[in-house]
Length: 302
Image (cartoon, rainbow, N blue to C red; front, side):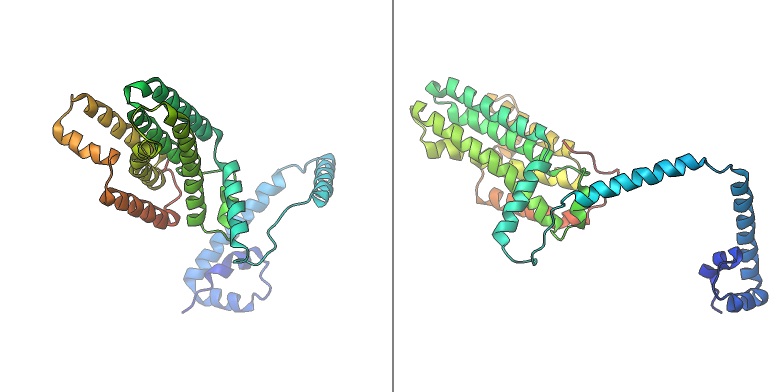
C-alpha cells in the first residue's frame, strides 16, 4: 500500500486541491489517520498562536514597501557586467580575466608578506655577497616566502564571493590553478628581479647559479605547502614549510642528526625525482580539491 505521506500536511490544513482520494485512504488506514490527526494538532496550535500575536502597525508595512521600492529603482539603473559569450571561445581572454579577478580576491597580507620577504632576502644577500653567500641567503628566504604565500592564497576555505565562484561555469580546479600560478608567478618574478640586481655584486656565482639556488627548493616547498593548505588547513601548510626551513637552517650548522639532515637537504638541492614528486603532489591536490567537504574540519585562510 502506498501512503500519501507528503500530502497529509496539506490535507490536514484543508488546502489540498483534490482531497477525496486522500480522505478515502485516511479512513481506511489507521497509520495515516494518526499522522493526519497529529498534523491537525499542529495546525490548531499554530492558528491559536498566530491569533494571539498582535498585528504590526500599518506604518511598518508602509516603510518596508518604500524601502523595497527605492532599492528596486536603484538596482534597475545599476549596470551589472556579465559574461555573454559562448563558453570555450576566446580562451586567452577568459584566462586573462580569471587571473585579473584572482588578483583582487587574494587577501592583501599575502602580497605584503611576499614583498617583505623578497626585500629582506635581497638585503641579506647583498650584505653577504662579498663573502659568496648570496646564493645561500636567497635559497633560505625566497622558497619560504613562496610557501607562505601559497598557503595564504590557496588555503582559504570561505571567501566573500565563495558562493558566486561556486555558481560560475569555471571549474574550481581552474580557479585553484589560476591562484597558484598567479602567486608563484609574482614570487618568481620578484626573485628574478632581486637576482638581476645582485648579479653584478657576485664574485663567483652567475645569474643562473643564483636562480638555481632559490628556484630548486621553491618547487617542493611550495608544493608541500599547497597540498597541506588545500587538503587540510593553511596553518598546517605554513607550519610544515617553516619546520623544514628550520631543520635545514640547523642542518647547515652541523648541530643535527645526520639522518635528518640527509632527509632535508634534497629539498634544497632537488633532483628529478623530487621535482616530479612535487608536480604529482600538486596534480593530486587539484584533482581532489572539488571533492573536499566544506565544514569545520578545514580552517580559515591567511
